[in-house]
Length: 89
Image (cartoon, rainbow, N blue to C red; front, side):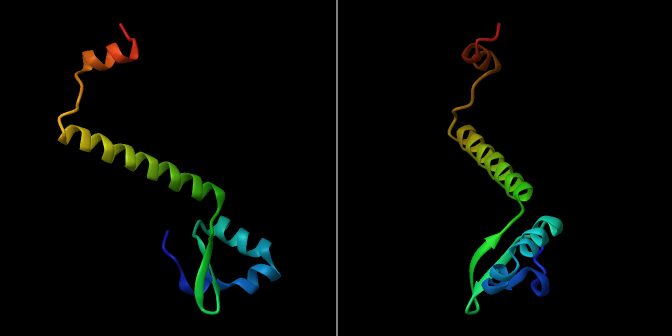
């Protein structure tokens, strides 16, 4: 998801003039659009599918990091302990 500076950075006034065009651009290109005001970034428009995918990936990576920290701290469980906690068998 590389930003194309010539296409993906637009002034906030363009969003006010034609919001559908900006939203469709983000949705169709699968790239976020950076909105600027007076030359500075103020917001990002991103397609909903892309946003949800990013959030799922972020949550997955957080869970992996937490699991690795638990292993490092010696908090891992045996398969039997997991089954017992889950009420399996």
